[in-house]
Image 1: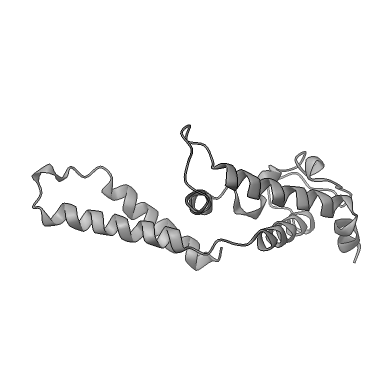
Image 2: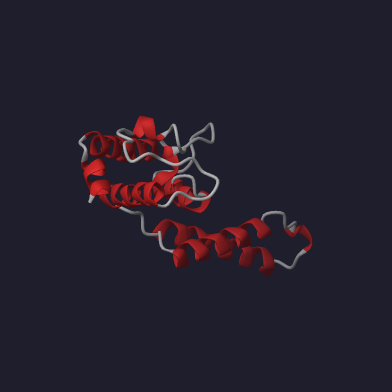
Amino acid sequence: MNDAITAALAALKELDRAMLPIDTSDLPAEVPEAIIATRSAIAAIHATMAIPTLEQTIERIKREIVADILNPPDGFKVIPHTVASFEELHNYRDANCYGGFCDDDFADVLIAHFGGRDEHEGMPDAMLDYMNAAHAAIDAWMRSGELATLLKA
């Protein structure tokens, strides 16, 4: 998701949070209607946010892994160029966060896209399937030696 979309979504979420505690019982009738209309507009925007394809997500994760290996962020363990699996990557990072999955705004859009939270407030099964498919593809990419070859270039 690009920075402009992420910023716009964050602003909309903040607006929605700000409206949640409003007690509308003492307000003129048109104010609650305006709040409902605004919330409906926010929901519509969330629903139409561009959801990356699985292939786009996989490519994003690859780029983020390569960037982390070549230019490790301050305060993080250095990931060796020899890292050869998604499981091994977990020794250095929460690898599940690659691809934006730990970005609350992006995760909320995905959760809505894949059917909303389940009865236990967990992620929808379809979203878990999407994440697992992305992680399996990354693991296969790493195990195939493509990452190591790319890092040697």
